[in-house]
Length: 357
Ligand code: ASP
Image (cartoon, rainbow, N blue to C red; front, side):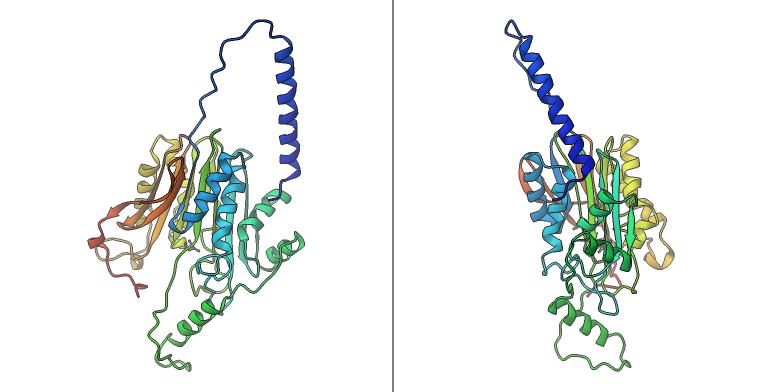
């Protein structure tokens, strides 16, 4: 993992200061001092993520308790999904756009240094989360997109590769062949259901010092219009961190999240004193209030999936969604596990959605 010159210098300066303080203190200690009570940690370390981050939260948590920076740890966590060809919602093997091209989005925020980085519509680089961090670490900008983001990544040493796996290519061809009865593609005989996936991984972490970071990375909505950028690389929508308050992020229909700046809004609700769960439920309600009619059923319920995740400065956390059933991944001293998201409507109240298989 790279470390920026700024971080390196400040880490070195802190370590040097620590040595000076320790030696001057021992030089003046003539009588035994009172037993040292270690300062209570500012927070309990915890890492949360979308459910596909179940392996990643464990990796990130272990790194954090060993002293790794929160952003380095969660990026290592999401790299597992980005590099896993079986996860068709992110990185290598992500489902492509309607032209069969994999275009990736990612963003990250580092709470303690108040920095952010993002990439949109990035092709050929499997780990957009790391490219987003490189934008943060090495430029005066926050977001790079398209061909220039790719060029930036290659210049920074990332290796381009074909991200369209055989499985995703086949799914794309099947999807294309079934667009309508009159198209010039013959339907396959097999009965494989073509997934319209949403996926993505969002991960948020706090360490014992109370430092917080967040990251979101995705291949976006499957079969999207080429050039489409979702919520994941939008700071304040796909993820957001305020080191004084907490962090939040999302997976699911990005357009609906962008409309409410969901991650920022969740952090603002937490700033007002709401718990992570209360904050996320308010964000979900705001999403629905702010949805155009075609996206809601006759009862005003959403015809799309969207899930939010949040942690606060105390290490409290939650996931929330519209319909009962979504889970999210957590790792803390009790180990890695999935927990149910809070929800607005019971399973039975979920309408049939246009993209249901
Ligand atoms: N939020 C992502 C996007 O809209 C997709 C997803 O989470 O599935 O690009």
